[in-house]
Image 1 (spheres, rainbow, N blue to C red):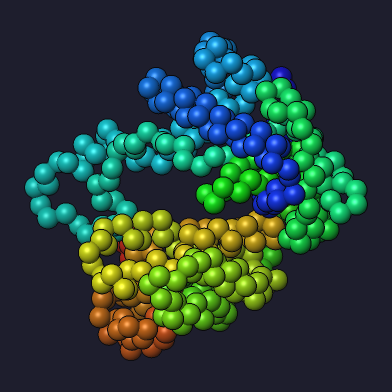
Image 2 (tube, rainbow, N blue to C red; image 1 turned 90 degrees about the horizontal axis):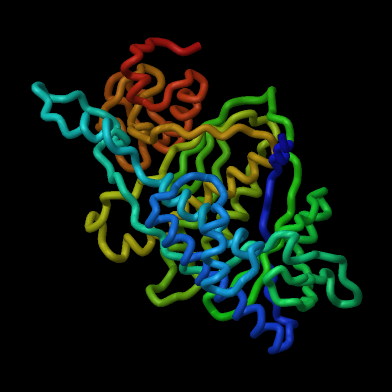
Length: 396
């Protein structure tokens, strides 16, 4: 039995091929566009067969693409692998059907108990994925990466096996050099793509072994808020300047999302993770679902700059490199629950202020939510609803 490949952390750094001549650019662009068409062909084929398994494509399917597009078997296998990943990721995003939906569809005889939003009926199918981006993953069978000379830091050699045979000199970037200086190693695999503005680029992949998980430290909750940024239960707050900046964005102003991402990245660098063992965050995957038509057009445009998913991605990467565990919890009523008297009431929150109508405890609403997330992480409950049902009366 073949040994399994050791899992490593992977990061991608994009470098645009601005120094290539027109002939090489044309050859690589034509190759990338052709690979995109072949990947879409495999996606259509797997989706038609309802093949959502993670297994590699069989030789019969691979040879069909070889005959249809006149490519090598090795290239067909690599593109079929990418198509399988696209189909599987789209299918895995669909919600479960069958027994769950049958239970939801039954007519209850009595008024059902109020449940968190995650138990509501949800979609059961996904549409067939469409490959819109022109990007292809090339393994060591197709390219080699070597140290460059002179003004070029790297030399990417396309060695055939279906890819065009040519040499592409590449200049490195500061983030890539910084990562390599930190002990990361260059992977033998890269991604070749065409940006939406027509520029050709390469995504270099760097790898590093996972660090050991931290066994000492504290559990910290983090609340992500559109207005107040990231609020941690240990008192740290960052990203609140983004709200003020988004109020200045004009309707036709370009690159606002890029500026917002830059501000989020700079904000996370200010957080001290030295004494943290576990971070508990809200699962905000569907926080915007069902909100269409709720807010004005101007507010929706500003709300679109609340990049909670991007913030979570950067946080996960940072915690992954430091060996910090990240736990997701149900965000249901975390800012309206009082951790002192274990009572929930929608009247507890008024804007950014939290004031418990039962015991009189007062706090900032987002800080109160972060402390509740910390409490959920310590007690092991998935959400406030489970905590209330447990009839837990004290916490030590």
